[in-house]
Amino acid sequence: MDLDVIWMDLNTKVPYLRYFFRSEYASYLNTASTVLLGWLVVSTITHLVRLFFVHLTASIIAIILLCPTTIKWLSEQLGIDFEIIFNEIPDKFRQILKHFR
Image (tube, rainbow, N blue to C red; front, top):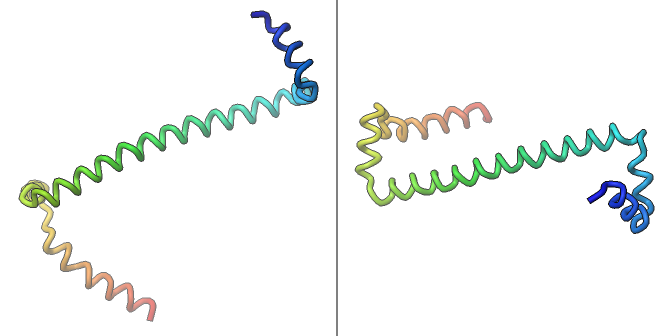
């Protein structure tokens, strides 16, 4: 289809659009469209990453709850001692509370 035909059709149906498509506004329209396109790309990527991490986190929690020996084996492989970590949590809270008193 011819671009002039589309432009004339738009011009007759929506006459106030011609004020926005003047040549002095071209740089503003270019900037606005670039910002909107960038926002769309970034928000889509963020949404996909969040979507994948939610399922990954839910799967890990389900494995931990259904089979605790798996997390015990994994912690032995990584060298993490959860008993020490859980015993240190109350001490850390006490240290934080001392700063607020």
